[in-house]
Every structure is written in C-alpha cells, then in structure tokens.
Amino acid sequence: MDNLIYKSTRGHGDPVSASKAILRGIAEDGGLFVPSFIPKIDFNVKEFSKLNYKELAYTVMSKFFTDFTEEELKSCIDKAYDDKFDTKEIAPVKKIGDDFFLELHHGPTLAFKDVALSILPHLLKTSVKKQGIDKEVLILTATSGDTGKAALEGFNNVEGTKIIVFYPEVGVSIVQELQMTTHDGDNTFVVAIKGNFDDAQKAVKEIFTDNKMREQLDGKGFMFSSANSINIGRLIPQVVYYFSAYLDLYKKGEISEGDKINVVVPTGNFGDILAGYFAKSMGLPLDKLICASNKNKVLCDFINTGKYDRNREFYVTNSPSMDILVSSNLERLLYFISGENPEKIQSLMDALSTKGEYSIDEDMKNKLKDFYAGYASETETCEAITELYKTHKEAIDTHTAVAYSVYKKYKENTKDDTKTVILSTASPFKFPKAVMSSIDKKYDDVNEFELIKELSKIAHYAIPQGIRDIDTKPKVHNTVCDKKDIKNVVLDFLKIK
Ligand SMILES: *Cc1c(COP(=O)(O)O)cnc(C)c1O
Image (tube, rainbow, N blue to C red; front, side):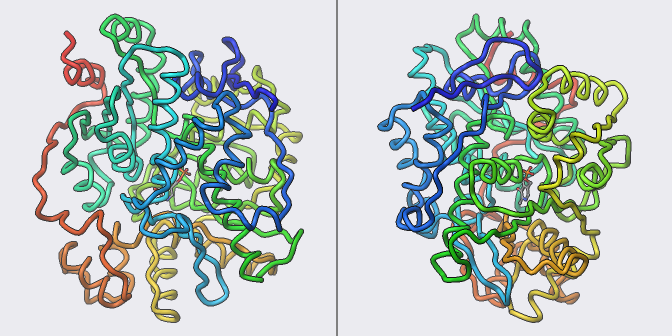
C-alpha cells in the first residue's frame, strides 16, 4: 500500500507519518496536518454492503493510517467499537417520516464525539509504541460541551496518558457539565474557563505551539497531544459513518447503486462535515454537503459569500456544542480548495488572527460548490423539535434540530428531492431542558432531572446508561480558572513547578 504522509496546512516542517501526526496533534507551525492527497476507494456498493461496521472502519481507515499494520489497526478498531455502544450497528439510520437520521449518539456519552474518541486513545497508544517513545502523553482538550466527556471516557485510566479538559464556564448544558465534573478517573482533570469556547480553544492551541513549555514538560517526561478534531486521529474515524449511512440506505432499498445522497451536518468546528468532504473525495457518491449553523452563523456566511468574519457578537445558544466563531477545521478545507497552497493558507490565517477576517478568491469560491449552507435561529430550532414530536412522537436534540430545520428550508428553496441523511449528533437526553420546553411549555419550570424521566416516558426511550445516576454522583472537579492562567493549571496538575 502507498505510504500516505501528512503535511502542515501552513507548509513548514517535514512531512510526517500518520502515527507521528496523531502523536503531535497539531503541526509545529500552528497549522493542521493534512494527508498529502485524499486516497481514493474502489467503492463497490454490493461488496461494501456485506461489511459490518468494524470491517468498514478498517477498509476506510487503512487508506489513511498507512504506517499502521493490519494487526495494529484492527486491534484499535476492536477495542473501540464494542458494547460501550448500545446498538450493534454503532451508527444506525432511523427513518422518521420521509427523512433519514444517522444516529451517532449511541456511545457512552451520548454524542457523536464518542465515535472518534473511543478509538483515538488506542491509535495514540499504538503510535507511542510505534515511535518508540518513552514519555507520558498529556492530552489537552478544549470543549464546547461534548468533546470533554467523550475524551474523559475514552482516555479514562488509559495507561501512559493524562488528560485535562477545559470547558467554558457559561454555555454548556447542566447534563454536559455534570458529565464532566463528576468524572472520576486517576488520570483525568477538568477545569472551567472564564470565557467561551473560542477562548478555551485559543489558549490550548497556544500551549501546543509554546516551545518553552514543550521543553519544560519534555524534561519532566511528558509530551503533548490533542483530542480535539485538529487531531487527524479524530477526523479520519468520522469518515467511516458517511459510508455506513450510504450503505444503510442501499441495504434498505431506499437507493440503488450509483445514486447520490445529500448529507446535512450540524456544524461548529467543521470537523464532522470535513469528514464528509473526505468521504466524497474518496469516491462515496455524495452530492450536497449541507452545512447547518446555529445563530453563530459564521460558517454559513462564509460559504455563501466567501468572506470569513469573526468580528461579531458571540451568542450562547441552546445548541452549545456549535457555539464557535473560529472553526479550526475549515483551515483544512481551505488548503484543499486552494490547490494545496500553504502560502495562501498562511496569509489567510494571518489575516484571521490580526484582523479577524479574510476573503477567498473566485477560484476557491467556485470549489465550494459541494457545499450548501443555512442556519437556524433559536426559535426555528425549537420549532423543529416541536414539529417532529407532534407529527411522529420522536424527540431530537437541539443540534440535530438545527440540521433538520436547515434541511427543511433547503428542500423548500431548491426543490431538491435527493435522498438526504441528517446527522443526529446528540441524544435528546443531553439537552432535556431545551428539548422538553419545545415539546410542551408546561415543562418550562420542571428541573432537568425530572425532565429526563419525563422524556423517557413520552418518547418511549429508555434513559441511557451514561446519565442514569448523574444527579446523585459526587462532583469531583471544582477548578475554575482565568484563561491567562491555563499554563499554571497544567503545571499544577502535573505537579511541576
Ligand atoms: C461537536 C458537536 C457538533 C459540531 O461538530 P463539529 O465537528 O465541531 O462541526 C454538533 N453537534 C454536537 C452534538 C456536537 O457535540
């Protein structure tokens, strides 16, 4: 198999193997690692439809992680996709009315982040071994709400690793916060940051590129890595479920060989939808990649105008995992649509950091034609939940509702009746307040934990294992810190002074 190498989107530093890129998380020049080309797959739908999720995962991931042996990669996949998911399909498609929902929330923390974060720790451990490194890996992760718990769960007591999660003090749901602050593992630490997700992400990225800090930790036997979707070990496992969704529709007789489908992706950091772009570039018959934003619609505006402008108000919405104004992974898309031109990416990213905005040229804009973008206001998000419950007695979470709302507008505007899969990225149990209030105003004043029980009753879903005792678990993390003190918090946790 051809050896695929990874380069920085900003062009500096030597190209590295997949395992090195996974270990480093982010390139030393602050750019993101991208494969030197997106590998093609010989997509024979009849053959592929015989594969189970693990086999499919191997087929897709082995194209990208070419320096892993078959045995190594299969062992990672086996450990990841087991009964910690409460459905054997891992990512089932559910038809509601005429619409298809790809349910990515059957993992231990009830959000799609589990799909990648259940395998990342194993990819990382394998990479440490492959590279002959004798250091402990310190994972630093910023979260807008869902990555945090999924990463804590994934790395919990994984030998040779420690993990610190930074989440914004304001914005995450009560369930999300409790999932993190009650997490009890020997190697895990959780910190609330005074600020929003962008502040947390920026502070963590700065630590990664801080050579002094890197050397200091190196001397103490630690190396950094990231569990955010800037890590290609997060991104590539997400490519798999675009294939599984397509195959699911094929097996159900909803589409025939060669048919194209659209996907709608509720988007924040642009990781999930970028995985869809990778799947399409590999040869999966995807037509439109529909990018759904919430009220923080910076991506929607970018795709429609070619101008990225983060100089705007930041809103705390009822879909907090998408409350982001600086979408990291967009840098990877820019790299590919610029004809793999790192100088151009460097100058766009410089403009973003100095002026908070940049515009792309006509050439690049034309290459955005794979994408369609829309957004849903807070009211529209709630209405989407209300409507789906009224007509089908099904509850969806707020992020999925953003996607559903944007899809309905897309269909109305374009009259496109191509079969479309909506990515259902979280369980409604994670956001009981917003979901239940949308279903009926009478729930407005009921507390979250009662609402979880009520949701289970009215929608006939069992309460997922991951949150069953969340209200009675002891809180083990209380640290709140200013973003300028992040470095000290890290050193304290590691007992380095
Ligand atoms: C993280 C998250 C998103 C956004 O995904 P990105 O890869 O950041 O675009 C959407 N929905 C939920 C529930 C999430 O947790």
